[in-house]
Length: 299
Image (cartoon, rainbow, N blue to C red; front, side, top):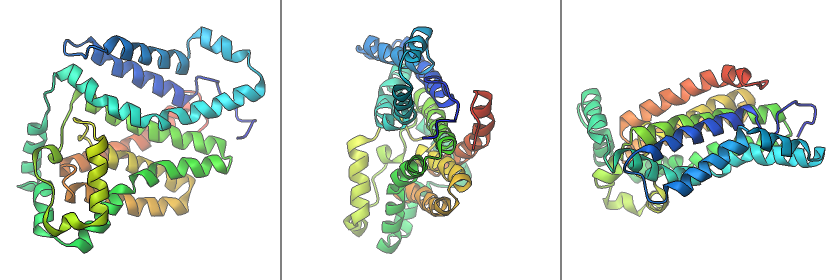
């Protein structure tokens, strides 16, 4: 990475946003329904805040490292939040149960859904159009989420475009954390917990099978509204269109398919997808000025 790009090690804009999220998420442990292991989880959150804000003793210890060691540490810190997103995602079910004791707000979203669409697109669309030629591309697009999220930062990192990499990483992590706050304090299960998935010959599809197996293995209950799949992909697509225009066009196509696939496959309410797209766009719009305000020089 470019050595002439000034940065705090640690304490970059992305570090600070990560620390703020971890502090906000830890508020869940103040509620009566918190899990028995909450002291250990609270300690883990406190350690992350101490490192990424950072506290003075951490900053002092880092200042004593060699320039080469600080550079390696900076690269590690740049990647850490994104790489541990699966852990943070898994924790969401514990956090929202701590706050609400297992209560969810699907009835609110279903009410909105009924008013907007006079029905439930997530429950009716696949039944109305049970075609493999439609189902498989939409399920494949839904799975492209991982390509959309991880490919742009990897490309920018390998190209040694330091500030572009950090700007993009800041934007996508801000999108994740904005959605995760909703999941903690306003948990919604989503249609896949309340309605049967599309069946019949659609279930024989290759991408259908992969998508459902992945969700069964690692879905965090209460993380439906707004759809982070859609919102994070929208934020990532918009910043990628700025930083990597050619890949950004492909990401935009995949994101559109992902949003429709989330509804068609019964993974999200249509209201989840719409709200996710709105939140992802808002994050993109505020990320650049916020990055600058936190001391960065956005690409």
